Image (tube, rainbow, N blue to C red; front, side):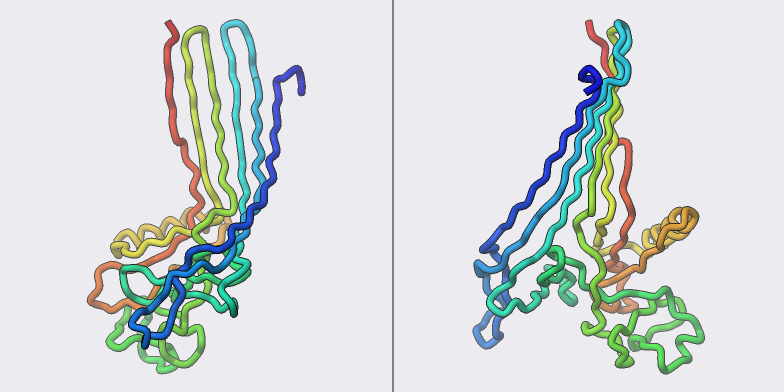
Length: 256
């Protein structure tokens, strides 16, 4: 196309994986909490687009661009005989933070959400669900089931670890014998879950979400946790969704 100065590629794919190895909860009377079994199936489908261009092609100067974007949708289609959801724990204790459920992406986050911090009015209001011993300034947890207490039953779907799409962009320049390459990449739509964040880091992440994404009209996301956190704990399991885009590499060279 355009005397080979522009090339576009499209790749469409769909792959179904079956007989997945999954840990299935079993009766405690067996002496074990779970059993590794060949069950379940997952469907991955997506689209990849690539673009290569020769922007300038002169004797002493060349400029080319390579760009790509990839979309992928991951969906659980089958889970065991009855298709019941599976809660997946971690080695850090607390309520299982991951969920396998038909129709959702694999290992979706299943967490207790927070709603800012407790005020003096919240402490005085008996209708606000609180943990024993909480005071002004502590995390305010969402009582999702409305029973007046915060526990594992208040977990809700809170995102997924997989991005909706990833992208890459590379510019290559050559002037006589000098080369310069600038590479960028990014991902959007997935969430990052951190088991233990220092409170100071959490405040910084909150400030970034409020100042940066609030300023451009973005949606400020709610922090979530695997479980209500005791006051004595210094670190808080949290999940954030921050679009990632950065310059990955800048390199240069000289041709002898």
